[in-house]
Structure formats: structure tokens, C-alpha cells
Length: 486
Image 1: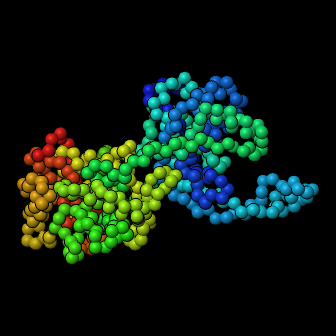
Image 2: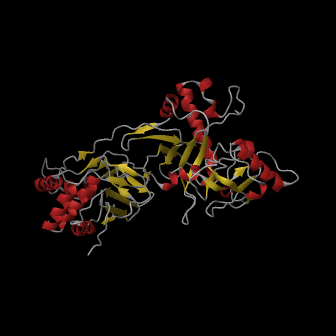
Image 3: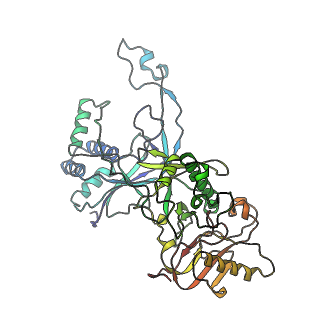
């Protein structure tokens, strides 16, 4: 007997070959990833029919088709190229008498076809019906799901099961484009009865889009989620500089070169570095957990602590939209970063409110007395006679410049290793080159260190220190969070 638990109903689908083959039609050039709930429902109906259309399973599928539209929890994917492949058609022509050339496959005429394939980063996806408290049909649904062997193309082998209160995974939920509706089982059954060899499946019901949401609300950071894999955290400075250049390009297109705000570019009108606070861009990584691996999930655009936020107006929206494309399928804007020295293009999109924990900014902003570096700090000047004392003094002054209390030298710890075990050391051997942190060229000869700071009282973040604090380095995270700021 399946264990009953309160919570959501989850259909877990694992792609056993690590690939998904399925598209919206023969001419499609890319796989339809992630597969929509109605496609999964069609696979369940095929299993139900093969099992003999048992009454309890019929009732279970009819109950499922009446539920509200589910959410999809799936990772991003890589798209495998789909060149034209010339294959014989499944059916011989019937316009004239059949000959060996019509029937024998090696002699048939060949027509172009594509077989698009998606390689998901996580082979397990989940379809989640939120708030389904009726567990009456769970056993019947699982009996049907166990006999589902593929989803989409017959080469997309899968394992399926239903869970109640199951884990939805770490992937942000996506709105389904299509949904089941009452009577869907009857429609699919009638289509198969009309033409068992090649049934014409009626179009699924579209899921109405939600009302449009503003790109950005409030005065806090704007989090951009990486769609697919992001580069190693040691390459954060490269990505963050690319991201700033992309935003500046958007401003050039919308307001002109001479009107890019200092708060975005970090440069005064004459081209010299600005002395005013400006936008910082930092990585958002899986840090501070016993299973953490420092994987980067996205990047945060962090406005200055004081003054109006550069992200809070029509000019920023126009600049952002000028350098992004709108993905209608997922109803999101995509910003693609590409070009050297990036090893591959990176797609970024504004993260929703229901996102993975690694994209939540609270650990970097909530009050804490102890702060530790996630990305190493680039010291403001070269070290001379007393490196340890000079490094502590630079860190203390950097805290003051940010408006934080000045910590005493005794409460500043400087070292090569981070307080978070998953974070790479600040200094690594010269080879291999990928083991080193990338430091922006103006600061390439400066000392790079990890820091741990204990303040006398809790302070609020974000805490950004050092010469490269606006471009992917010098990010600290609170360790012991409190409820009040100093």
C-alpha cells in the first residue's frame, strides 16, 4: 500500500537515457523541452489502454483531468543539432498498385525528417499539482504510471511514478503552456478509435497566461537566473564585467553613449572611475550548506545602499529590454552573454519569487555579526613591509567606506582558505589555469585573500569589499544572522 502524506501531488518523470526526444511537429528544429503536462497525460492514457482500461484506473484519469493546471519543475537543457535525415515513409503510397519499390523499405523513396533531441541538465522532471489533498486514486495512478515506458518519441525511455507530498526538486516552477481538461480522456480515446494506426490528436487546452508582472519591484537587487549551466565561480569577474557591458550597450541604444548613468557604468562623464556608489554585480552560488558545491545559479545586480536605485526606473527597463529577447514559450526575457573570454554563451533571465534558495538574497543582506568571503577580496593597494597588518588595515578601511562599523584588527582574519569549505582558495598554483580566480586586468597584480570579519554588533548587508567589489569579487555572506542591525 502506498504511504499517504499530505501535500502536493507530484508526477516524477526520469529520462533514463539522459535525453528527451519530442517536438511539436515534423518540421520542428528543437525539442519541446520541458514536455507539457498534456503530453504526459497522453502517455498515461496509452498505458491505461494497454492495461485493459480498468474501471478504477479510468476513474483516476478522469479525476486527474479535472484538477487545476499543474506547475512544471525541470532543469534547463542543451539542444542537440537536428540535421535533415532522409528516411522512407512509414506508409507506402496507395495511389497505384503496390510494387516492390513501394513495399520493400530499402527501395522506398526517402523524405527529409528531423529528430530534435534535448539533453536536460537534470534527467528528472516533476509535474506538480499544488494542494491536491484527495489521495483516493493514488494507487490506480501509480499502477498506470509504472507501465509508461516512453514520453514523446519511443526512444525517450522514462520511469514514472506519482508521489504525494513529494519533493518538487530545486528547479524553479514553470507555468505549463497547455493543460488537461474534463473530457480529455474521452477525446484521446475517440481519436484512437477513429484511426488506430495514426490518430489525429485534438489540440490540448491552452493554459491562460498570468497577468503581466513588472520586471523589477522595490529597491533591492535584481536576480538573474542562469538558464542552463553557468561558468565556475572563479570566472565570476569575467561574467559580471560582460553583464555590465551588456547593460551599458542597452543604455547606448536607448539614451545614447553620453547619458549612461554613473550608477551603472561606474565611470564619471570624463571617463575616469566614479567616486560615487554604483551598481555591483555578484554571483549567486550554492554556499553555506553541508552539501554545497559552490555551483553558480545566477547573478545579482545590487544597487547602491544610498540614494535612488538605478534599477527602479523606465530607463533601466528600456535598456534591459533593448539587449534581451522575449521567450514566448516560457514568458520570460532572456539576456545572452557571449564572446571571448567566455567559453560558451550564457543565458540569463529575471528570477521569479519562487526560486531556488541559492538565488535568494537574504543570506547576503540579513543582519549578521560574522561575515565571511564567498568570492575573495582584491586588496586596494600592493602590500609592502608588513603584509598581514597592511591587509587587515585595508579591509577595515574598506568596511568604513561602505558605511559599516570599523572592525578591530584582531577581529579580521586574513588567509588563503575560505570559511566555506566549498569555496576554492584565494591563491592557487599557476597551473592548471582554470584553478585560479580570474581577477580584472587593472587589479591582476594585487593580493587576493579570503576574509572573516567579526563585528561588535550585527550589521546589515550586502557587504562588498576590495578593489573588485563591483565586478564579481569581494562578496561576503553572513554566518550568524540576527534580527537587528547595528
